[in-house]
Image (cartoon, rainbow, N blue to C red; front, side):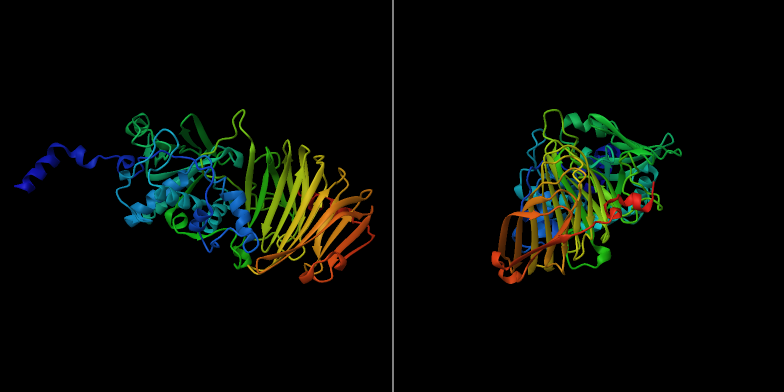
Length: 534
């Protein structure tokens, strides 16, 4: 009798049983929310091999990456990547991090950016949100960019179909432009169809919860998709709440498919040490009020962007192919009027540049901080004051002889330079700091670590300069610090600063020598000019 009743219900009300929308049955009844700060505990959960505590002396590179890219940048506008990937992990495994199906059972805020009611669920989604910065995810993204497919709607559509055939669920990330300042957004891609000659990828959007009646109509009206032009343009369009985002291979924003097999598992961060050179990602950071890297050029004269644009140069003859700006998938728009434009932008390079790298950047209203991590070294340059365009050359980044050429084209009032050299991971490191350095515009100063990481060399072409020196030797997390103020370098001289004994830093044991030097003009030229790439 019961069996007959079930058959009768199925016959009379088939839609009731089978027509639940994806967003109704398999997605969060919680609206996307921001987090201004993510804890070190969440950082540790996001990646493999992160130390238990935030210790700058034993794990300085992890601390650096946490402070600049993870802590206050990755979730400050939202957790769309984490919400999307976490939902797929639960669906594919029947549950994840102790949270079981069905997904809609978990309550949370829909209107006030408060997030999940369960604080442990919030932490779990935060941790998964960090997977967008894992080494596998970044390498996967760089591969798409190297192929020149990052804005190709047809390629994204076909990638979705490919991974669906492999039973590998996917998320889709889109950006408003190719500038990291404009932010990005990630959603679940769950179906694809061709309608009226246009391809569509159907979505669950963390910004549009089924539980909110006003947003539910986006799903019930069948508008929850990205449209892809089936013509030769390969363009795509998506209505992002208040405005339209779009792109095609010739311009606009990015569109990329990420399979769960890449972004789901917990993996290493890009700061992982001890990997082979080919697996290391070099990272560039720039922080400042409206500051941004406008070009990266390597020793071969190859560049990240097509000149005058923020379009990745994918021409093998002129493009780097292994370098990209990272656009956080936190749904972050550009700063609004009255909102602070202070930000940290991150750029990744697969492998280690080894040779020289030119960095063209824009100095905002109050200066900038530029940093690069590669291999076992970190170079940092802080410009105080100034505005406009600047050009900085990094030499030997990621080697035992890193250096920097400062030209001060943006009229900064002074600079601070730091080299951090890891001699033995988690055991020994040396830090060289130069502070209160005044560089005359277009009178370059060259600073370099030399003598097997024991000494600092400063070359100046100007009328002489004065700076404050700080040397730090770190052994088993214990720092020894030596400071010297008002160190003078004569015009046209090379100065070498070297302690006689790094194990016992003392003013009496500090050797400072200088002699006249003539810097080869070619060394001060742009790398692109040296290689004559136009």
